[in-house]
Length: 166
Image (cartoon, rainbow, N blue to C red; front, top):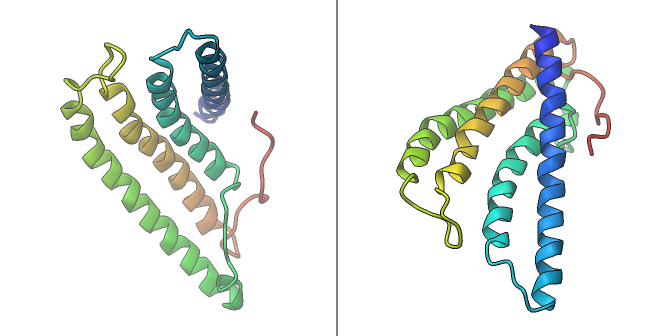
């Protein structure tokens, strides 16, 4: 199972990098072609679609690598055991929010089937599906991190800041 998860993580990194490169490349191409008098009307919608997915993949990678911004000026003033309790509680609250994203995101995705992107004949569900799918990925990562946090002595786990992704 661990081998499968590691392969999945690598695939997720590749997809996140491809999405980001696709957004940048598409917007650059769109700007150049617009200047040449050949606008790509669908480029904005396509970039929006790629961006919705890139946000969730990127957030999952950042949480896994402990690269999210963390303001702990107040937290470090507490004893280590209290810090651990606060970190675990905030993790559980974040997981509850992710569960609500999945719960409400699935009906949103279903309701968006008939809605189309303005310049493409593509259902908006492809964009709204990023909410429950990305939340499930974040939830899996959060559960793994929560178990690591509970097992650790001081409520932290791993090294802050991860390897470079892109």
